Image (cartoon, rainbow, N blue to C red; front, side):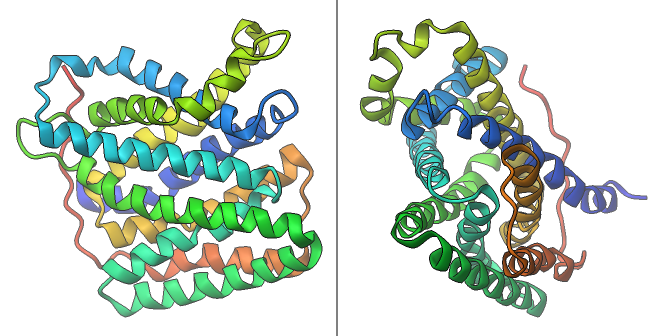
Length: 302
């Protein structure tokens, strides 16, 4: 078995693990909404993840040009905005529903960058599933669910930008910082951009959240599971996989989110929602393994 075929076969498994990490972290985050606003939880997740990645990767050892710096800032701003709007949606929507609707972002990327009929068919199947889920959500949740859908559509737009910019960050030119090093700087930049709305909730109140060790430990779990591990995996996969294939591989996430939501948050979907979620997730079966994949050795930062 060649390295190329091994990577292609393992990619779906890698994404299942990435999705599991990410949505277990999201489940923990939802449990913190009674102590912190969704904005503060999302912002804290970005800050902690940035600190962890910077300590591990030490990006200051690389030479940063104006181009690599502004690319990292743009990526970090989009990433942080995506996280914040996603958590605002989770305040009003079940986890599985939110993730499935957010998949509109990768669907849009696949529609713009895919070349074969399989990608087009997968996009159509995913779109049908999302429509089914949205219909049930609006019928059951009313106006509050409608606000949640607005937030998750903004998160979907952020997810689309994350994929496009993430591909640029993950495939640097020779001599530029690696994708993981850029990710660490990007997350720090995103934390700075959104500090005016995220920081106040961490330092206000009779007992500031920053002074609560138990709360900070839970935020560390959220940061590791929802940012450090999945986004690190994304940078590795984006380096090897075409953008269209990456977008459709993400379709394993709704099924993962459904399972995590049912187990951790007792969010039991309706039959129509299950069918919609299956339709979104089944889109991955249409990608097969026909698109060439370039596999390069991933060299850890020195």
